[in-house]
Each structure stands twice: as C-alpha cells, then as structure tokens.
Image (cartoon, rainbow over all chains, first blue to last red; front, side):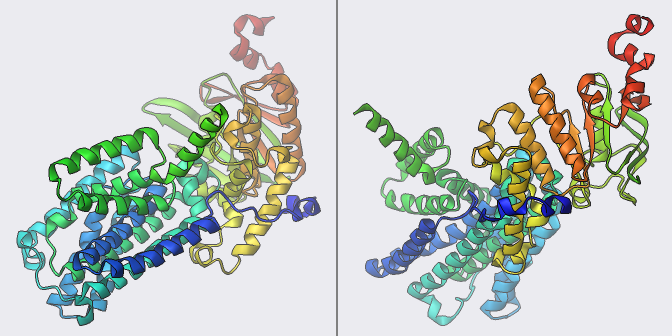
Length: 336
Length: 257
C-alpha cells in the first residue's frame, strides 16, 4: 500500500474526512441535551412521589434498553439482558448487606460481576447467530433466574432479598434518587452514543451488515462482539445495582424473561437503527401502562395494536416517524 | 522473485467428498497467478482455504515466509492477504466512500480507547484513510460514484467496489474470486486492465475464473484444477494447449482433434 500512498496524493489531499452515516448529527446532540434538561425539571413540576417513581423507572429502563441496543447493533438479539441486570442487583445487594460494604462497593462489584459473567459466556455464545443466539440467551436467562431462585443462602430465594440500604440516607428521598438515576442514565447513554458514533460504531455496523466481509478486511469480529457484549452487560449490572438500592427489595421475577423481552420490545418499538430508538421505547413502555392504569384489561390490547402498527408501518421503529412524516408530506405535496 | 505464497499439499474434504486434494502452487511476488477449472473443480474452496474462511483437512500455507495455515481471515488480512468474493459482497445500504472506510479498518482503527476518546492517532489515521480512499477510488475509476449507495450501483461497479474494499486493507496479495463472472466482454476488459494496474503497484494477484480467454490475456502463470486436483500448471499458452485441459473443458472429441 505504501506504493499507492506515495503516488497521486495531491489530488485527494483536499478531501476532508467526511462524516459517516453513523455519526450523530449536531441536532441530535442538542435535542438530547434539551430532553435531559426537561427531564431534570419535570418531576419538580409534578412534585409528587409517584411522579419521581415513574421517572426513576424510566431511567433504569433507558439504561437497560440502550445497553441492549449496543448488543443488537452487533447483530445479536439477547433475550437474557435483564438476567444480567439481576446479576448486578444480587451481587450489589450481597456485597452491601451481607458483606457490609458501602453502596459504592456494591455498585462496583455488581457492575464487574455482570461484566465478568459476560466475558466468560460471550466467547461461547457470540459464535452463534440469529435464532440460535436468541434461543441460547433465553435459556441462559432462565438458568440465571433459577440461580436467583434456588441459591437461597445468598439470594433469599423466592422471598427475595430484603432490607437493601439506600445509596445514602439522602437518597431515601425519591427526589434525590431521581437525580442520581438521571445522572446514571445520562452517563450510560453518553457512553453508548459515543461508542456508536466513533470509529468503533462504524465497524460494529460493518459486523452486523456483513460479518464475512468485515472479517476479511481485518476486523476481529468475535473479539469486537465480546468487547461490546461485556460493556453492555456491565451497564446492565450497573442498572441492576441502582435498582436494588432504590427498591430496597429484589426478587427473581424482577429479572425474568418478561423483563428481558420488554427491553427487546423497547428497541423494536423505538427503532433498532439509532440510539434514540431504545430511549423512545423506554419512555413508551414505562409511561403508557401508567397512563392506562385505570384500564388494566385494555393495556395489553393497546400494546399489541401499537406493536403491530409500528412493525407494519415503521420498520425503523418510532424513531423513523420523522421519515414517515416526510414521505407523507411529500406525497400530499405532489397531489396539490 | 521470491515466493510470496506457498501452498503445500493442501486438502479439504466435506464428509468424504474431496473438494480439494493435494494442491501445490507458489505465487511469486509481482505475479498474476490464475486458477481455472470447470464449475465444481474446487477453485473457490482453494481460495477459501488459503484466505482462512474454511480450515484445511491437511496441508500447509505459507505467506510471506510465515506459516499461516488455518489462521482466521482477519489475521491474514492484517499481514497483507486480502480477497474478494464471487458474489458481490459490499455493504449494500452504504455509500461507496463508507464501504471503503470500512475496508480500511487496519489502517483506520486506532484501538478502542483511542477511538472512544478520539485521542492519540484517531484523527491522523482517519485523515490518512480518507486520502487513501480518494486514491483507490480514482484508481479504480469509482470517484464519480463516491457518494452513491453501493446497492444502487450496476453489477460490474459493485464488483469493482469489492476490489476497492480489499485494496483498502493495503494488501501484498489480492485474491479475486471470479472477478468477471456475469460481466460483459467490455466490462471484463476493464477489469483486466484494473488487475494489471493493481499488479503494477506492487501487489501480487491470484485470480480465479473459468473464462479461458480472459485468463490467458491476464495471467503470468495458470493452474488448472479438475475434480479438486491439479490438472496442469504453467504458462498460459502451454497450459491452454494441453490436451488434458481441453478434454476437461470441451470433452474428449475436441482433445483428439
């Protein structure tokens, strides 16, 4: 290649690095900043304990969905992501309660435990593709849930893990915990966004779109996938630790297959091609059930309809609403 | 001329079917080496074995003085052995330029932490890579379609883009799997000129095809494969006159005539 580089450089030297299609546009970043600011203010406007609670749950869901989004971008749909949330939650609770470490020790231990498990399992399961990966992660999630259920001396079994302390006395007030959760979510989203918008994201997309071609131009496919999987699971564990210290009580159903599936649905409804997708999905899947609280029977019906409509008309999820709108206005414009 | 690629007694069977058996050849640096043979002769399997896409049952591959038998494709790409695919393999939903950026992983990706924080050699590597993209596209006559989505290109241009992606890895040896399959005669002539240009820049080339006329005008040496084995081996004019080769291609009657 040196011979290529030495010739004909002048003609191309003016070509400035063009930003790839994977880069986050400036408007996206500004939009995110505005959203974050609004989020920081809204609960104060509501000023109601329940409002904080919902907002905190949205933050946890956002961390879960965005970290799962990283794995999805490598081309794998994991059905055990919330089990990794559970690993973080249980390890954090164990370290903080049983071993008596402060919250920060639990947070670090929970995050690392989840990452370590991903590092051990990733090299094996990430060689599987498509439906086989989905199936194996589903089973893995079930195995982990059974461990939470049956390892009673550590996890408390079906009775759950009780009396987990708040991160600090001040965070017993949901108003302050909300800021903690919002900060954690912002940090996670920022890291995921940076990964996807950097050169790393370029090659993650390359792996998803054509694994063989990526491998043949020198991308270490398996190693890259493992790295992303470990980072994503570390964030899952991080979220789990925060959840444990917020709810003060955890039990196996909190981390079961339904929860994992919800994280996947957040990505599907919101959109799997952009990081905004899982964020929209997290809002949607947490807020809508709360708004429909008085119509419990209707919840599932409405959810089903929304899911079908989104998948049929917006293959890019709600994040692609903008494109759908543009298409519709263009059409009506042509008519007039 | 030193041996860049040495293949020794390479074999691969699939459940008893010997797709490739006892294959030997040497590619010197600066050579255009051709592998021809009828459909099912094991040409693509041979390239897949050398490029690490599938692992050999037995035999050895030496590249640039190192034993590279059964190495992964990404390890081979890193030491300068690149390949294209028989089916057009490009990132269909991305622009031509973005396809090339992805091909440039080896010279563009500065490592996870550097890339994450955008520090170290990240910026320098990216701008070097953009320069190289300009050169490779000029060179393969793709500059005009730089911002076209790869999937919208005509078939021939997609094949050329496949070559551009491989060239972005800065290879010493480029292996082309059926670069003219499905192309018109005029397009095939263009591809032949392009391959010669690649060689003139100091990159050795291995070409696979079954189009004799195309190969005769291109290759320095040719290996003819039939049923997974070597049938003939040597300069194009000798090989193509060999009765065994004519028989394999056209049938026994033609060989006698």
